[in-house]
Image 1: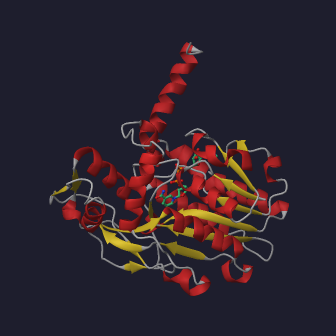
Image 2 (image 1 turned 180 degrees about the vertical axis):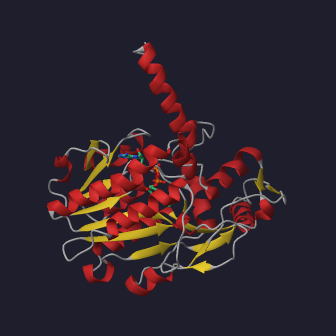
Length: 340
Ligand SMILES: NC(=O)c1ccc[n+]([C@@H]2O[C@H](COP(=O)([O-])OP(=O)(O)OC[C@H]3O[C@@H](n4cnc5c(N)ncnc54)[C@H](O)[C@@H]3O)[C@@H](O)[C@H]2O)c1
C-alpha cells in the first residue's frame, strides 16, 4: 500500500491515477480543502482518509510500505496568509509524519519540495543552480519547504530512505485544476481575455515541469534501488523558461483557437527568478522529463472542456482565494451555525 498525503490535490490526483495504473494499492490522507470530487473517477479503488498531517490517526500508516508526501500549503500567498499554519504543516508536519513512518519501519518516503528554494530575485547574479548550490530561502513558503527537507535528511540512515524532489512550477491538466500556476494562468487569461500581461519585461526565469512528469518522477523514486536515492535531492524541470517566452508558447499552443495579444510591462519591480539544472535525476535514474509546455497546454485546453472545468471565476481554482474564503466561512459558521 502506498500512502499519498495531499492525494486529493492538483498533483495528488494525477499521481494517484498513475499509481493505480501500475497496479499499486493506494491510500490518500488529505484534509480535503478542495473536496473529494476530483478523486471521483478513482474513488472506489482507493482508501480515502480525511485528516490532517499535523495530527493524524496512526492507523493511517497500517499496511503502508511507502509514502508520497504532497500535503501542505502549496504556494507563496497561502504561506504568507498564515505563516504559523504554513510552518506547522510544511515543516513540522513533514517532520512529524516522517518520524512516525520511520518508527513503523516504513522506509521509502518521497517529498514534494520546491525549486522556489533557489529563488534569489530577479536582480541577483543569474546562475544555473543544481542540488549542490548553496541556498538561502527567504519567503515563508520556501523556508518551510527547506526546513521540511532538513528534517527528512536528519532522519536518513540504513532504515529510512527519504527522497526530496525540488519541483519546478507545475503545468498541465488535473481533475483538481489550479489556474494560479503561471502556464495554467496564461491559458486561462488567453481564453477569457485574449491577452496576457507579463511584468519586468518578462525577464524572470522559472523552471517549469509537466504534472505527469512530476508524478512519474515520484514513482521512479519509489521504485529505484535504495542505495541510488537514499537522502538524495533531485531537481525537476522540463526546462527553464523566461516568462515572456512562456507567454509565447501558450499563444502558439492556442493559435487555432484564439488570437492572443501579449502585453509587456517594462517597469522594474521585485520578482522571483531562478534557473535550475535537472540533469541529476537523469544521471542517477535515467529519468527524462517528457512533456513540453506547448504540448501540455494543448492537452489542457481539450481536457478542461471535457471535464467542464471552464468556470474560470470559481475561487476553488486559486488557492489563496479559496483558503481565505474558507477561513472567512469558518468564522461566519461559528456565528450562524447551520446555513439552512
Ligand atoms: N503545484 C506546483 O507548482 C508545485 C511546485 C513545487 C512544489 N509543489 C508542492 O507539491 C505539493 C502538492 O502541490 P499541489 O499543487 O498539488 O497543491 P494543492 O494545493 O492542489 O494540493 C495540496 C493538497 O494537500 C491537502 N492538504 C493541505 N494541507 C494539509 C494538511 N495539513 N493535512 C492533510 N492534507 C493537507 C489539500 O487539501 C490538498 O488536497 C505541495 O507540497 C507543494 O508545496 C507544488
